[in-house]
Image (cartoon, rainbow over all chains, first blue to last red; front, top):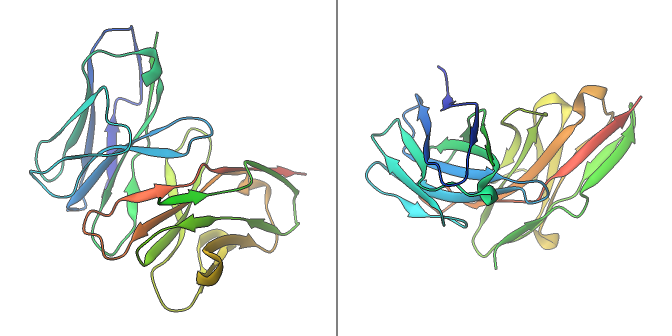
Length: 111
Length: 115
């Protein structure tokens, strides 16, 4: 099992550009999450999907959109990137009664 | 408000010394608790978790943590630190009754190990 995979690993964008971060899990988990990690702030939840077909806002959703494409895949889209969105983005998946499993992260720089 | 506090942003210990990382939480529901470790440039790896039962839980790499409900704490300990333990450590709390699985994370504690 690959677990949780994320693409790309690194990305540099210019202000105003758009991009989609991809996440997939092969553990048949119902729930998936997108976090951003910034120094001194831990992980903050951007959006989550408790089950296929549903998505909900987390703590810091502004400037982002998500799509739960199917049970395996959960993408995060930046429509118009801003320097404040420079961060490391983690995807995670979860099944009830267990922990969350994390992907390796995407390091995004917005110039 | 629900929150997790890791009071120590940065800790330095000598190799072979004991370690305790503090975690305090504020949570309305019955919590389940986690410690994760993150090496530089890597994702988060689960060290240990507490759902119920014995309040002293054992994890990987020789770590343990003790859940103290009266103190709303879940401190992480290791008797003898190795240089490879240098990393960032995150405490997290969730609701056992929740079907969303959402977690709240602390700000993290960076551990430096002196030779």
